[in-house]
Length: 246
Image 1: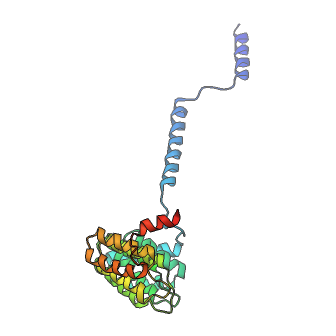
Image 2 (image 1 turned 45 degrees about the vertical axis):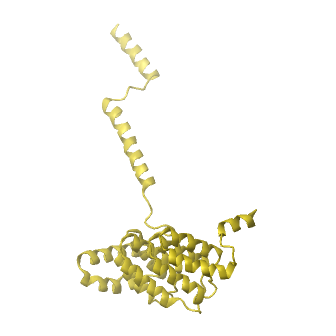
Image 3 (image 1 turned 180 degrees about the vertical axis):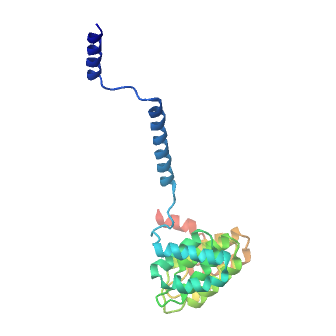
């Protein structure tokens, strides 16, 4: 009887070799899936270091060295610029600048930009100035905004071509931070200095509405008078544009 029972039991096992998981297996498998899922979510939510172009290893090391020297021992900062930053390629230098701006390291970014300005390949870009001014003003570095503005003023000459829409973006930034004096300076550049960058209809609309929105009504009157010279009695730009579109 015993032998027969064992034989039947063995036969049943061979037909059904699966055995229920142990308690340990039941607990561990869901935990592993949870850990992998959490890691996957973190990797999806992780923001890139820089929009557009990944930072090279050399650029990352330079940023780390610059921040360390700037925060702990500024006497070593010039040494880091000479030994690391000055050896970077053009695109890496620009990437370092944009990454420092992204991290709101305003004063360090300004020093990096000043080094970039003396490079033989450097050419002024209004949109880059606009980006730097946005970051500086957002962090309360108004004196640095003024300095950047003077840098741009020294670089805009008849030998370079600029675009009206780029200066319009800069005007919008200056208006948003209520820098009426700089707004008018930039506007004067467009009228008399920057070749191929005269104010257009969108410039006047932006200036009139923007200056009035920040309470600069006297400056707005000046712009309206100039607009009259370009467009006659029709100063309702929005209505005029809608009429043209229809």
